[in-house]
Each structure stands twice: as C-alpha cells, then as structure tokens.
Image 1 (tube, rainbow, N blue to C red):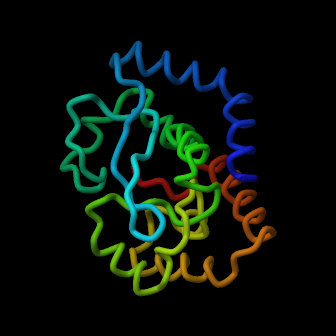
Image 2: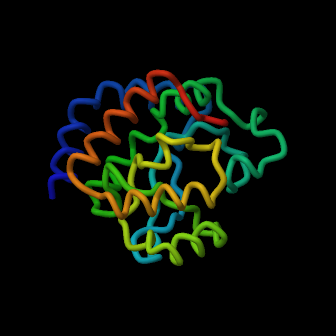
Image 3: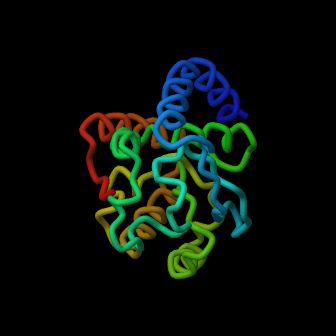
Length: 183
C-alpha cells in the first residue's frame, strides 16, 4: 500500500517532467509515447510493463543487447532517457497497478527463460519486481545473469525497510553518475 501511495504522489510531482518527455518523444517520432512489453512478475506471472519509448517505432521487440546495431534504433532523446533512467518513470503506473514495487529484481522479459530458471531455483521469483534493486546498483548491465541472481538472492535474504532505503539512495546516486548502463 505504501508503494502505491508513494507512486501516486511521485506521479503527481513528476507530471511536468512526464509531459516534457512525452512531447519530446512525440515531436521526434510521433505516437505511441509509451512502450509496452510483456514481463515476468511475482510467482512467474506476466504483466505489461510501461516505459517511455526510447527506440524508434520499427525496432524489433527483443532485448536491446540482442539487436545487431542498437544505436540505429535509438531515438535522439532515447539515449538521454536511458542514461538518466527517465524511460523507467512510467513504471510508476505498474506500481499503482500493484504489479511492481520500488525495490525488487527488475522484471525479466517474458522470453528470458535462462534468467527465470535461475530465479526460480534461488527463490527470487517470489519477489515482486521492482524499478530498482540490489543487482541494479551493483552492476546493472555489466554483470552476468548468474551474478545478478546471486545479488537478487542476497536481497531476498536481507530484505528490510532500511535495506530498501539504502538501495533507493544508492540508485539515486548511481543515476546521477550514469553508472552501469550499457545501452
């Protein structure tokens, strides 16, 4: 309940930024403004995640690292959105819908069977996915999926209000320094 309430407050506070990003995307590449993609939620259920669209309309619907030349699909504003994690702001809608929380493992793509097999074996699939998590501030795109799941399991074992506060603080400082973003 606290996650949802905080997400509503943030959505209201950040509405001018939402509008600015939406207008920028629309001017550069038209509609849609949001990118919607099937992701894995708690207990291996599925939901649609919402993000600001950082890629052109004709981009194949696969993980960015699987694209041959991801730069050719990136919107001009897309690089900035990703570096500052502004593309993730619509995840607040997923929190309000009860599909995500602020801190937890990032939701896997529906077809990331290798990652999900490791998460199920580690019990991490029992956690609701988050906007940020222990793995994000300890490597993000720079670590292997085995390392990522190891960090997610550590989060599961250490989960507490104060650990979440620490992760949120470190996320903020990581975003400021633009650390660990591969694309």
